[in-house]
Image (tube, rainbow, N blue to C red):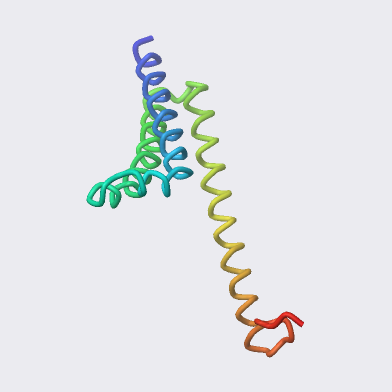
Length: 114
């Protein structure tokens, strides 16, 4: 029972870190404008650390109690998010490469409208 309570606390802490990291992601421009100069440089690293801390905490919870459904669900959500992000990055890189290729081949649509 103690292991399950510790895993539950780890999962809730992980979820809070994950949510705060995503809120920071959406408010990064406002936070950098609001904070003074030396502190505004730390907004993005703190966001990254919150997201990584959330993933590490859920991994620790999964290792401590593998049958915990909350930890398993959070882990699946985090893995799906990482897979979606990697897929979007790959699609973006392919789109950039295709647009550069169209400029090299002198297609009419490259940098000209008409």
